[in-house]
Image (cartoon, rainbow, N blue to C red; front, top):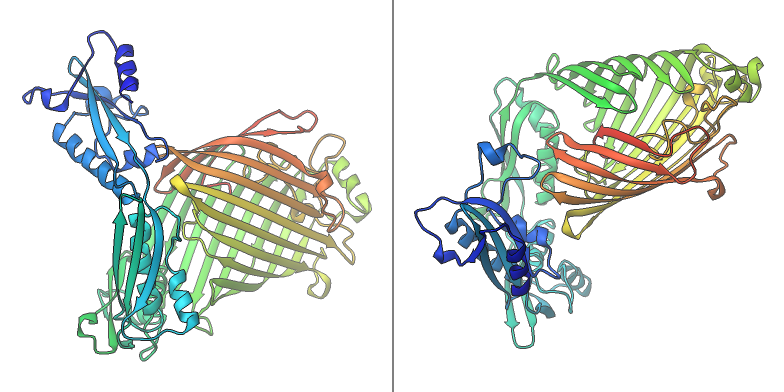
Length: 611
C-alpha cells in the first residue's frame, strides 16, 4: 500500500509533499482536499467512510468549495482513525491496523488512510444456557435459532449483540417482561476463532396492567385508548406496544407518540404502560409540483381534516393535474365502523384521463369497508358506481375489439362489486428495503348489478424486497391479470383493459406501447397481462444511489392466455437521489425488441421507486 501512496504522490500537482500528521504546523489552517482509503480488499470502503466524521466537500456541491470549504482538523482525523480501528475489530478483525499519510499541497491536504485488514476471527462454537428454567428440546432449539450466526461465520460485534437481544426479545414476547440475557466471548487471536456463550434468565411472567395516557388536550383521550392493541391482564408482549404506537400515530393527530413500560424496575408481575403523545393540528394542507417525462408538469393540492366532528373521522379533498390526468376527489373515512378494526371509506371522484389509445371522462362513487386482520392482512369489499364517457378512440382500435363497432359502447354506467386482499410486511412505502406486498384485486360489473357494461377482472400483484450487504436491495415483482366481458359486453371496455409499458411497467417501452397495437400503431390493450421485474438497488455516494433492472411483460387479447413465448424484455440503469419524501428516480430503459416506429430507448423520471 505504501507503493500506492507513493504513486499518488508522484501524480500529485507540483509542490505536493507527503508529511506525517504530527509534522503539520499546529497554528496553520488547512483546507481538506480529499479523503482516500487504500488497502481495503474485503471490507467495504463505503462502510469505512460511513464511520468517519471528516468529509471533503461533495462533488455535487461545488459552490461550497468557495463559500464553505471543508477544514482539515487533525484531532478529528485521529478520532476517525480510532473509529475505523474499532469498526474493524467489531467486524472480527482483531489484528487490523490503520495508518494515514497526508499529501500537502500548499494549504490543501489530501488524507490517505491505509488499512491493513489482517485475518478475520470466525465463530468456533456457540452455547445458549438457561438459569431459572429448563427448556424443552423444542424451546432450546428455538432459543438457539435466535443466534444470527453459525460456526465458521465471521465473529462480528453486531451479530454477537443481536444474539443476546433476540433471545431476550423471544422470552419477553412470551410474557417474561424481566428476561435478562448475559453474553460472553473468548477470542483466540492465535487460531482466529471465538467461542460464544449466552446465559438466559427468564424471571417471572408478567401481564399488562394500567395504561396511562398523557399529552391529550384537544383530541379526545378515548381515540387514543381505542387504538391500544392489548387488554389489561393480557400476557406482556413488547410487540403489542409497538403495534399500539403505530396505530396511534396512524390517526395523524399527533406529532409524536411514545409507548413504553412504566414500572419494569418494580418486577411486580404487572407491567403498567405510559402512552405519551404530542398533539398536532387536526387540519393539514399539502401542495406539490413535479415533472415526469410521461405526464409532463404535474401538481396537486390536498386539504384534510383528521378529526372531522370528532371521533377520528377524516374528510379530505384533493386536486391533481398533469398532461395525462386531471382529478378532483373527496373522501370520507369513518374508523371503528361496526368493529374496532373496520373502516368505512367513501370516495367521490371526477377525472379526465388522456391515454395513448383513448380518453375517458369519469365520475365515480365507490364506498367500501376495509378491515385489518392479524398477520398484516387487510381486506376490503365495496360497491362502485361510475359514469364513463369514452372519446378519441380510433376506429382501427374499435375494429380490433370482439364484436367490433356493433358491440362497442362508448359511454354508460358501470355498476360493480369490488374486493381487495393485501398482505404488506414492508415499512417504507416509497422506498421499501425489506419485506413483501401481495395483493389480489377483483371486480365484477353488470349482470345482477345492471349498468351498460358487464365484465370481470382479477389482478394479482406480488412484490418482494431482500436486503443485501452494503445497503443494497434486491427487489422483484410479478403482476398477473385477466378479465373478460359477458352478457351484452363481448369484450372488456377500453378503460378496464390491460396495458403494459411505461414508468412503472416494462421501462424500455413507452406508455401502453407493449402489447396489441392497431394498424396505426396505437395501443389496443388486452384481456391478459403478465409483468415481471428484477432490480438491484445500491448506494453510490452520499444521497445518490443507482439501480440495474431487467423487466419483462406481455399483453394478450385472449382471456387467461399467459405464455412466456410472447414476453417482451427491457433492461436499463437508473439513478436515485434520496430525499425525505422518497427517492427522486431517473431510469434509462432499452427494449430488447423495440416496436415499429418507437424509440430504441426510454427515459423515465418520477418520485418513489418503480415498485
